[in-house]
Length: 280
Length: 267
Image 1: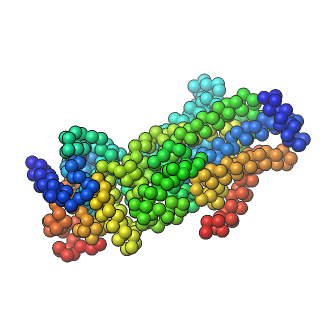
Image 2: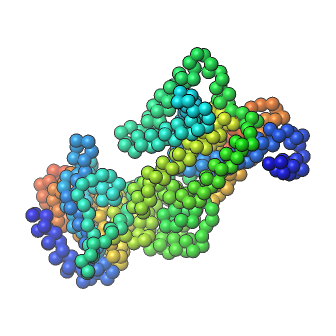
Image 3: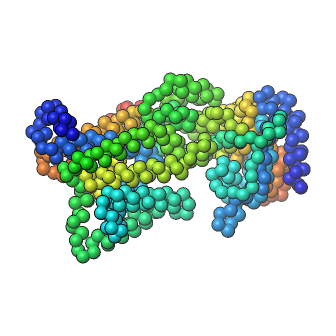
C-alpha cells in the first residue's frame, strides 16, 4: 500500500494527494466505478433499474435485522439480507401472478419500513443517517482490499457468464431451448448486484447508488452500436465521473457521491444530444 | 386407441412423403404422450398426444387462450407438465435426447439497445464473451448461418432496429444453429408485412426440404396452414380434431371457433 501511495504522490501533481484519505478514496473509486459501469449495462438491458434501486433501499433493513440477530459486522448482515431479498423477489417474479413493478414496490416499501422501525427504536436513527449520502473519504485500507476481491469476482463472473446472461435477457424460452439455466443466471446476477451495492453503499449512499449504476450505461447506450462499445464507453464514463467527482468535491467541499452523479448526468445529456447524429 | 390409429395413418403417409425428400429422412420420430399441464386447480392442457416425424410441418390452430403457447412451453420443458416426450431414431430403434429449437413470438430488446445481430447470435453459440472481443471465426460462422435465410447483411445492424421480418429471419437462423430435431415456432407471421410473409413461407419450405427436422407451428394464418402444413391440429385444452387442413376445417369445432363456412376463414 505504501508503494502505491508513493507512486500516486509522484504521478499526481495535486495538493490533495498528500492526504491518505484522499488517496484511499481515489483507489476505491477506481475500483468501484468500472464495476458499476459493467453491471449497469445488463441492469438496463434486462430492465432491472427499479430492482437495483429497491435493493439499495434494503440496506437499512439489513443493518436492522443484523442488529437484532447480534451480527456486529454490518457488511455481513447487509449482504446476507440483500441476497435473500433479491432471490425472494426473483422467486415471486417467476410465479407471474403480479406485475414485476408491483412486486418490487410492495417488497421494497415493506422491507424498508421494517428497517426504519427497528432502527428508530429509542430515537437514535440519526446514527444511521450518514448511510443516506455516504462518505467515501472514510474508507479504510482493509475495505479497499474487500472491494478488490469483489472486483476480481465480478470480472470473472462477467467473462464466464455474460453471454448466457444476455441470452436470458432477450427471451427466456429461447435461452432455455439452448440449454441455458435461466433461473440460475438471473439469481446469480441479482446476488452479484446485491453484494456490490451493499459493499459500496457506505461510500456512495443509499439515495444515489442507483444513479451510479444506471447513468454510465444509460449514457453509453446513446452512442454505442454494439456490446463492445457499450461496455467500453460505460466503463470510461463511470471512471471519468467518479475521479472527477472526487476531485471536484474536494475543492468545492461538497459530498462526493452527489457530485459524481451530477457529472455522470451531465455526460448523459451530452451523449443524448450526440446520439441522433451517430446512429443515423 | 383412437390416437394409436391416427398415428398409424400418419406414419404411413410419412413413408410415401419421404421419397421426394432429400435431407429429412422421415426416420426420426417424436412422440408426445399424455401431456398435461395444470395451473392451480385448472387444467390448461389435457392429455395431448402428438406423433411427429422429421421433414413435416405440424400446425397448431385454436382460439386465443386455447393453450397453444402453453403446449409449446411445456414441450420446451419450461413449465411443469405430466406425460412424457420420446424421441426415437427408427433406423436403429434407439431413444435419443431431443434437441428442441425455438423461434419466439417476441424478444425483449428495448429501443436503443447497443446489441448488434452478431452480439445477439454469438451469445447463443459461443462462450467467448461478446463484450470483450469479436471473434473472426464466429463472425464468419454466424454470417454463413444468416445467409441461409438471406439475412447475412444484417449482421452488423443493431437488433433493436430490425423490422419484424428481419428479426424473424435472424431468430430462425439462431434456432437452427445447431440444427435441432424439433423446431417450434410461435405465431411466426404476427407483425410481419406481406413481403416478409412470402419470404417466411419460402424459408419454411427450404427448412422442410433441406433439413432433417420436424416443425410445430402455432399459426392464425390459414393461408400458411393450408399451403405448408402436413398435419393440422385444432387445439382447445386438448386435441379437438386433427388431420389435413381440409379435414379439420370442415369439422363443427372449427366452425365454432373460427366462424363461417368452408370458405369463411380469413387470414
